[in-house]
Length: 473
Image 1 (cartoon, rainbow, N blue to C red):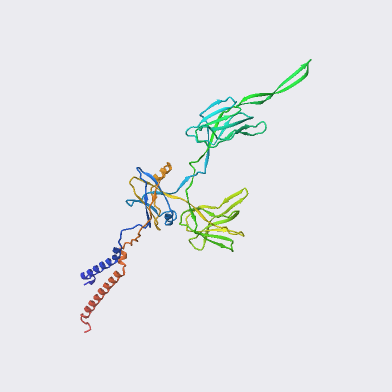
Image 2 (cartoon, rainbow, N blue to C red):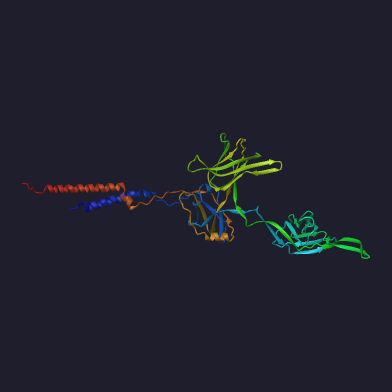
C-alpha cells in the first residue's frame, strides 16, 4: 500500500496547505485599504465661471516648487471624477514695456490756409488708428532755405504749443547740413496745426545780369548785378512719426523676493566675503545685492552646494558688481544674471582683495514665473496634485491647448486653495503562488509529512521482512 496516496494523508496535506496559505495571506487581508495616490499635496483649483471651453492658467508658487522635482514631472491635475486633465507647463511672459518701435506714416487728411503775414497754416487730422505723434518731418525738394515752424494741439482752447520755436533749414550753399524734422511733445487731441513762417523767400540766382556800354566799338562801361528770385516753399508731404510700444515683444514674467536671513562671514585668508542663504527651490535667474556703499568694483561668484558632497560648492555665475558716483559719473550694476536654476543651498563669494568688505543690507532674488495651462469646460471642477518621488512625466494630448495659444487665446487666471496633505498608504505586493510554496511554514509541514510517511513505510517494510521464513533452516 502506498501511504503517500492515503486519503487521510492527502486530506491532512490539503488542510495544512490551506492553513499555511491563509496564514500567509492574513497580513495582506489585514493591510487591504483603499488605494491612495502617492502625491503628497492636493489643492483645489478655484476656477472662474465659464460658459464654453476656456483656457485657464495656474501660476506655480513657492510651496509647489519646494515639494516637486526638477522639471515638475510630479504635477498632475484631476477633475471631480479623479480623471487626469491634460495641461502644459510653460514660462509665463509679459509685454516688454521698455521695447518700442518707430512707426512712420504720411498725413493724408489735412487742409492748407495761406495767411496774410507770408505764413502757411496746415491743419492735420489724425485717423482713428494713428497713434499720438511725437515728431514730424516736412518732405521738400528744395535746397538753401530756412523756415520757422510752430506746431499746436488744435483740440484745446487756446491751442497748446507742442514744440518750442523750431527751425527747419538746408544750408547746402555753405555746408552739407539739412534738417526738416521737428520733435513734438505728447498731445491729447487728434488735430494738429502746423504753421510755416516766411512762406516765400528771396533767393540769389546762380545767373548774373551783365550790362556793357560801348562807344565807337569800344567798351566804356561794364556792370554786373546779381539776380534774386522770389521762391515759394514747397512741401511734397508731411511725415508723422511715433514711438509705440511693441506689443509683440515679450519678456519672462518675474516675481521678486527679498532675502533678509543670510549668514555673512569674512575669510581673511582668502580676502573674501561669504554670503550663505537658502531658498525654497523656486527657479532663480538673478541675484541683486543691496548695499549703501559707493565707488567700488568687486568680482562676485554665485555658487550652489553639490548633491554629491555637501562640503563642495559649484560655480554657476561670475560677474563684476560696481557702483560709481563721482561728479558726473553715475553708474550701477549690482546684479548677477544666469540661466534659471532650482536649488536650496546658495552662496555668494565676493572678492575684496585688500579693500574693506562691503556692507550688505540684503539680497533680492528674481524668479521666472511658471504656470500650468489647461482647457476647462463648463461645470468642471479640478484639483492640483503634486509631490511624488517616483511618478513619471505624464504624456497628455495637449494639441488643442497648443493650437489655442498659437491662435492668440489669452488664458484666464485661476487660483489654488490651501494645501491639503494626503495620507499615503503603501499597498503591499500581491502574494504569488511561488511565494506561498516557498513559505517556511509550508515547507516545514511538507517535510514533516514526508518524514512521517517515509518512517511508516520503513516500519511496515521491516515487519514484512521479519515475517518471511528463514531459508537457512
